[in-house]
Amino acid sequence: MVNFTFRGLMAPTLTTFKNDLSVNLDVIQDYAKFLADSNIMGVLVNGTSGEGMSMNVNERKQVTEAWVKAVKKTNQHLMVQIGGAPLPDVLELAKHAESVGVHSLLCLPDLYNKPTNSSELIRYLKTVGAAAPNTPLLYYHIPSYTNVNIHMGQFLNDSVGKIPTFHGIKFTSTALDEGVAAVKANSGKYAVFLGADQLMAGAYTLGFDSAIATTLNMFPQLGIDILEAVKQSKLDKAKKTQDTLTQVCSVVTKHGAWVPTMKVAMDLFTPIKVGKAREPLTNITGEQMKEMEATMKTININN
Image (tube, rainbow, N blue to C red; front, side, top):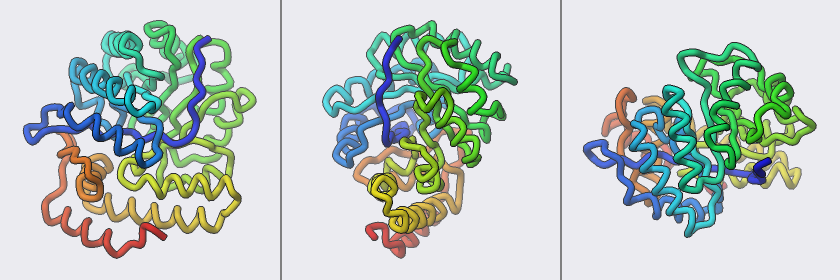
């Protein structure tokens, strides 16, 4: 049985692209150091925020290898998302990730032949896990994108003992009652990472202890402060900081979709330049960027 002990905060990294939208691997070491210096000691690569499903298999491998090299210097936990592709490619990515030494895998469901119940999802993940038998595997639950609506509390209880490498889920949903059921499943032995930035404070008070949240890339201190405040039972502080983070999310995403606007925020508010998002995502205009920057100045992020 492979072991998976990481808990806490993990940044789903943004894939850095050059002006021609080819992958820019040169920024990754500085990116890893920036997050580590911000006390973010876990990174997820090639997920939704990382536009993994907009890259080909070779590009995804190159990005993975660059992050493996980077985290050797920063001692961060490296999770790689391998799903969102035809199953033969998912298995190839799983084998590759294990061969280069990633610490854990995250996997979307099949996006065309969607699983409709726990047993189908367990079968799929068992197949994926067998391709990387020495690496912990987690499932990526994001029904707003996948339209796979299997109840995660039920699935986690059903999965016990059936997938040798399986250790938990990323829960990107606003259904916190389902999330709490997932946290409690299998006597709380599974890792459950919240994937909803605007619900951190509420989720932590209900029993979550970990998150994979995009804003940890560019506003890491807000996420750190929310978790610490809840741990210290300073719920007023947690709520106030959550309100600030939710306001930040609203400002950033006012003129566009989550990923392209978060990439702009990364470029504007950190030293790390990640570039634009790839098609089929739509990038925002220069005027909209200026409005984001100006409005952000009116928010007291360091409250």
